[in-house]
Image 1 (cartoon, rainbow, N blue to C red):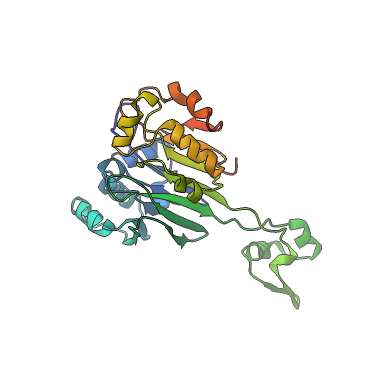
Image 2: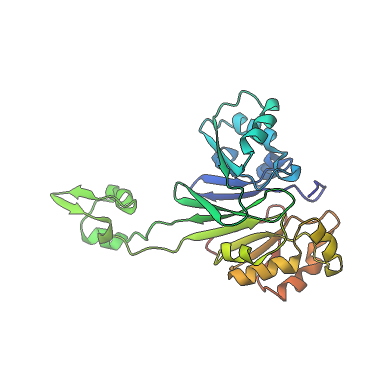
Length: 292
């Protein structure tokens, strides 16, 4: 929630085949990303959960950094209603960017979800329960079927056609029409990542995040003795997020968005693992490659 010597503010980077989605942009995000040797110019989509400063105050600096690293392609920024007004105000101190910004304002209702596609990824948003409109996100990566080079070789298909067939397109060769199903081995399951912070826990979150490969969720604190204080501020406890992960059937849970008063998150990890065994305390630079 507050920057410190040991913790940056909120951001989450997802990348596939050189295209990246960034979720939230707290103060100093561009520095945190560079420390992980991530290529800022790969960001095509920025998802904002809500407009509290610890989730968006780093936006002007990030946008200027993107420009300095040579980005010229459009950046899509999506978030709650009012997004364009908020971002436009922040751009007063980051004018004349060398790339266009596109906006997508998402629903402000109290139930249901909204989805849109970016390339081979689907992004779904879900309304949370915080002091202002706040969204959780689920990102689904649809993967190509497995290409079987042995099948292609048996049909005497030149290697230069492999990529086209793997992309799902027919190929004409030596008077024959080669179709993708002749060289592919079937569909692969999509990969899914769920992300939410700044909310009271409620069971509909689990329904929205059902079956995710990785759930990244708020764990404001692990000490059950201060649960009421955390709830007053509309945040979630370690064990509550672990319960959401269990109900969702998530494969793994990373806790994040700690209270400044929580010096050692691992102190309460065992309690959360009583509810959901594959719970881990997040830290700056934690990363994984899916499937894992």
